Amino acid sequence: MKELGVYIHLPFCNSKCAYCDFASGVYSEEIKERYLLRLKEDIANFDFCGRTAVSVYFGGGTPSSLRNGYIADILGSLSAVLPFSNDVEITAECNPETFTASKAAEYSQAGINRLSFGLQTDNDVLLARIGRRHTASDFFDALSAARVYFTNINADIMLGLPDQTLADVEHTLNTLIKEDIPHISAYALKVEENTRLFKEKYRPDDDLCADMYDLAYDALSSHGLSRYEVSNFARRGMECRHNLLYWKRREYVGFGAAAHSFFDNTRTENPRSLKVYLSSDFKPISRYISPSGAEAAEETLMLALRTSDGLDIAEYNKTFGGDFVRDNTSILTPLTENGFLTLTEEKLRLTDKGFYVMNEIIVRLLGG
Ligand code: SF4
Image 1 (cartoon, protein in one colour):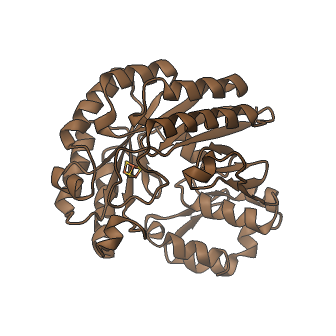
Image 2 (cartoon, rainbow, N blue to C red):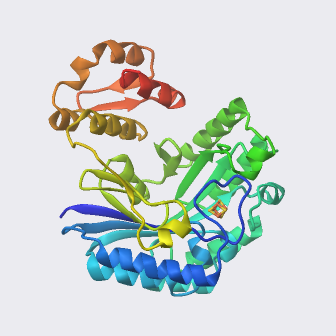
């Protein structure tokens, strides 16, 4: 069975958050219906070449803001042309204020089995400051509704928000630990151009962000949520299979505006503009990547080192030839001796210390 992940981008929100640079916006019901037709057409016309879906991920945007039946309709189109594995993981991103008891029932009936809530913080003042539409209380209501059907639940939190203190982060972490959320993604805020925070000239304090990350790492790991990727923590067995596909450089196909794919050794990117995506003749940007070439090797290394599982050295040597350890001794030796990497016969991994300077280590390994 050749495994595949499917990503469906649903770029619809009820308003724009102050930090958001995603391909998302506020659109009419008519556009949402045209988009649905376009998605279904793209899915029906795609040649999956005998693959089996092991994960389907509805991201956005705010998938939970869409009318009842919208997501079930997409899943119906997909399952008509692509077999799903028995244990397929089907995730929907949800914002707390749009996730109701009826949404929980609808999603469960449609086959969704994992929910990812955009909480960001449980401090109502901070939530308002960054333009979120929910309160902490909305999150608790959504969680109660979700728990009737779902156990596989993620909460996203953000570090480095304007006016956010270490005590705020600690409070949010304690809330999630008390609620026994099995998967938490903790992202450091990056202020992108074209966001409200950028225009307000807000820039996070790197040192404070690092302290917040330390706090998250300590609190979560001491409560049984291991860091399995630089920003992702989970109880054993609750890791997000969809994201693991990305980091293991497995195949995935993305549908919708701004969606990316990696299929048949080709990386493809759909147009970000909804208008262009909805036009009949858009051309995605495509690039073939030789499966045993230098670019594939770099991607494999970069992605693997993000994860606590690390790089499988034998597999790497088999795919790309050569002897990774021998060929890189002069770079690996100082990094292992100084405690940034651990190297066994099977794996190359970042240490806790190495995770802090992950990008620099990757650049060095790539010969930069
Ligand atoms: S809800 Fe998510 S996608 Fe929508 S504006 Fe806010 S951060 Fe962006």
